[in-house]
Image 1 (cartoon, rainbow, N blue to C red):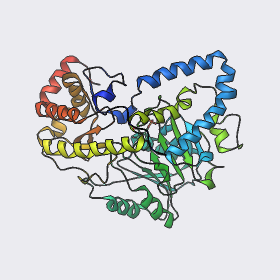
Image 2: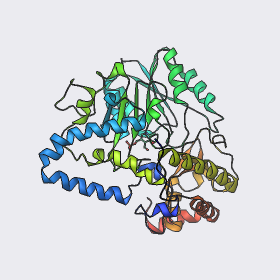
Image 3: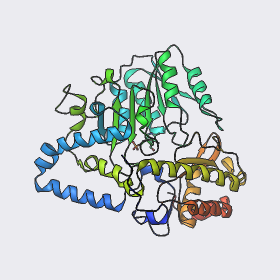
Image 4: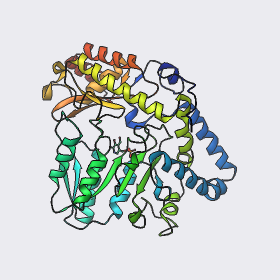
Length: 408
Ligand SMILES: Cc1ncc(COP(=O)(O)O)c(C=O)c1O
């Protein structure tokens, strides 16, 4: 199908579709997404529609509509329609998968040190419940390329390794990992992979198709801008009867779809609107255009910020390990270690003094920030960030925040 002609420009024109404070530079789409005004209005309409007859809206036609939208989302992410089920978020999907995936006491489950902390905490809980052994694998940065990642992960596998929980886009470091290669290498050792693609929908083209992992999850409420509480879990055909949703309700063992489509009474609005969220990007020329544009912006802004900060990038400058985020080390003069303020102080300073919302975190002993690039951003946003970093006085920031008495 020919993509629709774009009707909107990127950057400040696109931004009018979101509700950001007029003086805010929003460089953190990655954390919790941002919902365009039109979709918020649709959510109000859908909720009103449901209330005209809640039994019809929540239950009868509600459940049928959820299945239809799940199939549409499956096509977008590259999952099989019969094995794609809604959950409220990627965390729920990972909890559900690890609850029902066959694991024996003593089985090792690997997770990278670039992984999302909540997933590691989940693994610690599964260890308590089921006696598995979670192991964190260290991946050094700068990361020179995909083959280093494959080598690092595969050389950490032992005879006891049963499962790898692998980020498709790492959370603190924003690296795109070579999922297909790792799934293939793991398969040759009889090791399964659960892909944590929390950031992947909207950032990558049909990300669930990379390799044929045991399970894959992705959020719709991050890059596709869906109403929050919208994610999917896809599983491989042989596991469809085994992997259960986070909540068991009426349809136990009926089918994967039926089990996921009804998980008890709740507000189905975010799921019902997932297809509309995906189609929202048609006005910018569709997802292929949006993805390529956002990726190109991330690659250019990684290069610009590294040059302005006088630092080396943590992944190749050609962008081969990026989606549409990039993590950049702070300039050396702001790397103050334990002598300096904690990351949240600097994050709060960037917001309070410069009105820039951006995550700041310590990783591998150095301070970093992570930029997000979506349709409403343009290069001026990152120039403003670079100027703010030039003006940053770390110890002054600590004093100012202490006086204000708040961090966050
Ligand atoms: C890699 C990764 N996994 C899981 C999550 C959790 O997503 P959610 O809070 O939507 O469950 C995140 C959130 O940023 C993430 O980056």
